[in-house]
Amino acid sequence: MAVIKTEHLTYIYGAGTPYEKRALDDINLSIEAGEFVGVIGHTGSGKSTLIQHFNALLKPTSGKVYIDGVDVWAAGKAALQGFRFDVGLVFQYPEHQLFEETVYKDIAFGPRNMGLSEREIDERVREAAHYVGLTEAMLDHSPFEISGGQKRRAAIAGVLSMRPKVLILDEPTAGLDPRGRDQILRLIADYHRTTGSTVLIVSHSMEDVARYASRILIMNNAKVHAYLPVREAFSDPEVLMNMGLSVPPITRVFHRLSQKGLYSGPEVLTLEEGKAALKAMLGGAKDA
Ligand SMILES: Nc1ncnc2c1ncn2[C@@H]1O[C@H](COP(=O)(O)OP(=O)(O)OP(=O)(O)O)[C@@H](O)[C@H]1O
Ligand SMILES: [Mg+2]
Image 1 (spheres, rainbow, N blue to C red):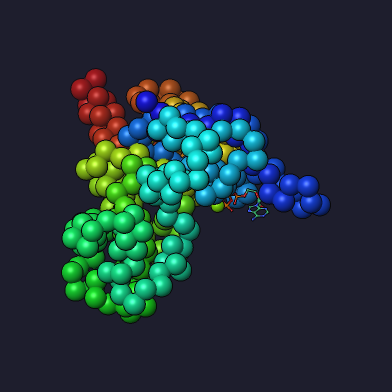
Image 2: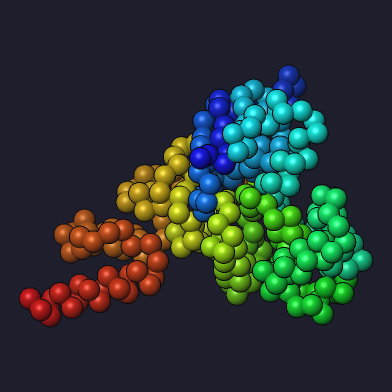
């Protein structure tokens, strides 16, 4: 069943003013539970606006959003809070929103708002800290004393502690060094695997999307250009490249090889797959 669905979702910033901007234009989308979705598209294409509709932060100008089959804006005011717990949204640079005296209190903020008992809150904080690789000792630190990468992970833990059914992250690796990026992506992939929850990541990195996502959602100029399995998206790199979106270099190399009739296997998305494909080709040549 679709965990998130939109019907004719349209959103206009500053409607009726000279600055009116149609950021989402008639979006019809259905995301199945358990998917790992990479959301890509040019700057200004509507990615952030779209995902803020998925946890009831923005109200559609017109059209509908359903979470678990429930029409979000017809469910009544009391239900809105519940949607925000079910669909956890990690903003870009979420560490800017850390504000408590200790990391522990920051991670506990969401569960506390949910009205959970002290014991349950404690359990959730420790579980979330564990997911993101923060040690017990770090929980007592001020969020201002820890490193940039740790801050980012603490902020993500602050959303995980609500045990959202759907986890959405807006460019979670922005501004991190390669090591920090890998750590974040790996912890998100682990979370997805172990909890079976639905994950959406807005990313500018095709490599990251190719490596981790099962499906790709391509936004273009306020519309969904495509929502399809990752492998299909990369089966015709020219389509993506014509939109100004990159394709992992390794995918391009193998695409070129197949155009020359030198490769005929499935789409290659990662270096590991490239190595395996090369080995198979060379092995095949030896046998011939
Ligand atoms: N608060 C706002 N007021 C007015 N216009 C806005 C506002 N936020 C976004 N927009 C406009 O809406 C459009 C979609 O913006 P959005 O932030 O959703 O794009 P995005 O795909 O997330 O871009 P980026 O990759 O730069 O984060 C853009 O044209 C943007 O300028
Ligand atoms: Mg954005």
